Length: 161
Length: 103
Length: 280
Image (cartoon, rainbow over all chains, first blue to last red; front, side):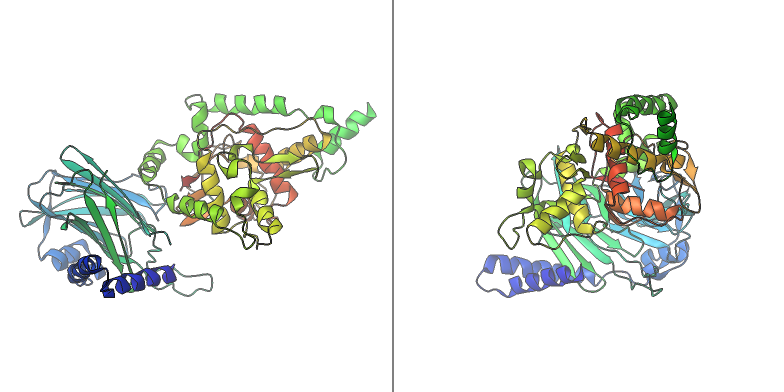
């Protein structure tokens, strides 16, 4: 698994060095530069927070309040804590970010999504939940934060079906 | 070597729906191996989606995202035949990217 | 009369390796009884839906399964399997060359009884034989490569009904019966048989996990299990089930495993192959 990633990264960098395929090379260079800037913006501190309030403060610098315009779709009982399908959507205007937190996880922030203009305020993903927990969706709209939460039960089986 | 990224991008009217599935261990750093040693965290940090050179979605992922991660979102402005580029970088600095055509 | 009593005792014995009279073995009758049992136990489930295992018996699980199936995690294994089947061996041949129709759309015919060898051949066994016959190293029966190849083959057979044949050959009938006995025989410290969970308690919870009905239980194999974070073959599932009842697992592809796969697959005749599958 690791070797394949290193190989493709090496190949990716080699491509950028190839003066021959100038068009491809130039595009790749631009892409690397643009992406590197974003990659440097991975909010390491936010991903280390242990409470939803702290995660929101570190990520957005604000607090959030519940809103019925944020919809959180998650199962009542997760079929398996390793893969919990969770969707968030919102009818609020000017949504610029959606974040999902799992209260009982070691670090509460699971994922955060940047929503540029023109992109729908909705995301579906699959998250890990360590145990039964509140899942909290936080949506940034017009510079303010709104949330919805739901409890998802996680059981530990071990016997298989 | 097959790409780690599988994507389905479908345009319907003004909206393009994008689903991506990425092959990655997404080790959280909290799990122990058979010897009782912690398997170090190894997970994707950022995934960027670009359509026609414009960033349409960015995912910032932590270790709580499931193995072989999946994400779905939609955006306006894409049409059939357009290029959709997906790139990811993980916490070890590895990366992969691919470009698919919107169907 | 005495011989009949002897035979029925032999049938009930745990290690029945004495010759079984062909006329006491009746797969068609077993098939009808098996099917009727599950359909009357779950009257609301459409026959074909039994292949979805625990998802056919629990609404909450069903919804999560549909969400996973939108872009299923076993997709990578299917791709890998396609690659492996087409990759040339050192001798220039490929795995596809070992199988009828290049391995496409044939999964529903396995396992089958090989008259020449007098034993049941499963798909996994056939894959490894192909490798060995071509001078290649065989796959681990519980590993990812075997899972990938069988995932691809299952994928090309999706929707095709299981078509397992039991020829009128005493050895085939004996293998079938042997598999059936294995299925119903208790083992392990927990003293469970396969039937304890999958015939007596399907739809119920065992330590918070939903049990799948035995009808159609192999149709989705191999499976990507969230619990495993990866793919698992039939061999992997059989050996882990043995461990879970605190029994000593057999070696993959031992006669009992091949025969119980034969029995269960025959019981699912007519039900569509749904593999590869995703499970909790």
